[in-house]
Amino acid sequence: MAETTRASNYNYTALSDPNADVRLKHVYGMIPAERGTSSFAKIELPGGGGVANAFSMARLYAMLVNGGELDGVRLLKPETIAVARRQRSLGDDPLSGRLLRFGVGFELNPNPSQLGAPIDAFGHTGAGGSTHGAWPSLHTSFSYTMREFQLESQDVRAAELLAGLIDACRG
Image 1 (cartoon, rainbow, N blue to C red):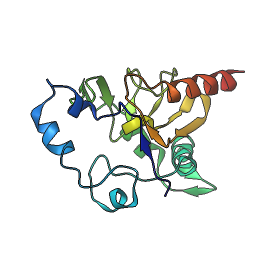
Image 2 (cartoon, rainbow, N blue to C red):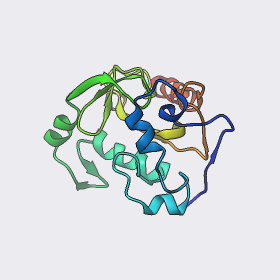
Image 3 (cartoon, helix red, strand yellow):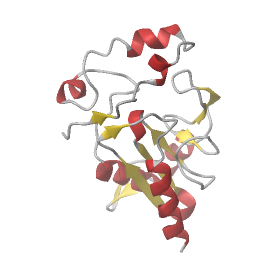
Image 4 (cartoon, rainbow, N blue to C red):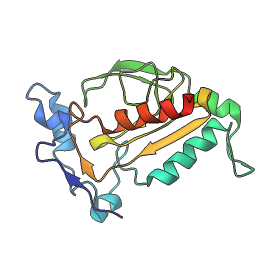
């Protein structure tokens, strides 16, 4: 596992905003290990403890774009994927302060998120700048993992990479 670093100004939104929901400060202020370390990977942190590399995440989303099939093996039914991509919630995220639209486990466009321009984009963004997802209309999956955590409000890395990818896809 590659160790990650934090930009000098990096902090969880919930810990840097004096007006943030106090419950978030209790949750994120009590994480017993530094993100990006093997100690962190061993703790159980629902909704924030995923550990993967970009290649594996892109393959996961490739399977979803391909109707649930990967390398000739059916892993999910297309109907299951359709259910997961149907909007289930819409509202302000108390952690990041941004409006989010979710299916079952996936952020959905249109969303002020880092999933790129296609209206059918779905995926998930993560702490510090990671972004994973798919553009079904372009038959494309993507994943960006990073070594340095940066503030969401100042981090343009994933957005710039996805802008280049969409240009390449559209030729």
